[in-house]
Image 1: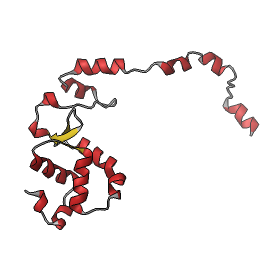
Image 2 (image 1 turned 180 degrees about the vertical axis):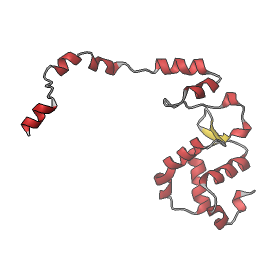
Image 3 (image 1 turned 45 degrees about the horizontal axis):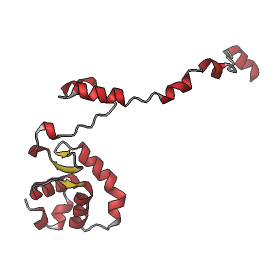
Image 4 (image 1 turned 60 degrees about the vertical axis):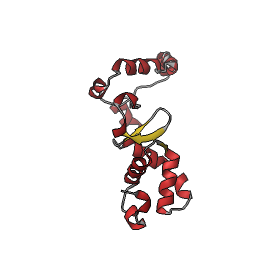
Length: 147
């Protein structure tokens, strides 16, 4: 399907992710986020301010769609063109352990997570006795008396 020859009303019926899929399919090379989104804006004849207003949302939609991958050079391509050793896997801290087990580089990911632990805030909690010295505990009976 040639996305550039498609009528505007047909293009408008497609999602930005679908248009991106066709753009990448036709380009035969990877493209950065800004260029992809600018091409969509051009194809749909949207105002230029759309770029600033929607680029973040567009990036997020690409990163959650399994058809696309983000390459090390910061460009997007179709996942079907790449083997898994070229894919950047973004690890979410809330990701389930079972997902990490599926990762080929689990040990490497764990090393990165350990190295990235920031213990600078731990010092704030070392003097909890000092912080709590002025704390007064009131039971329910005393609370009723004060009212």
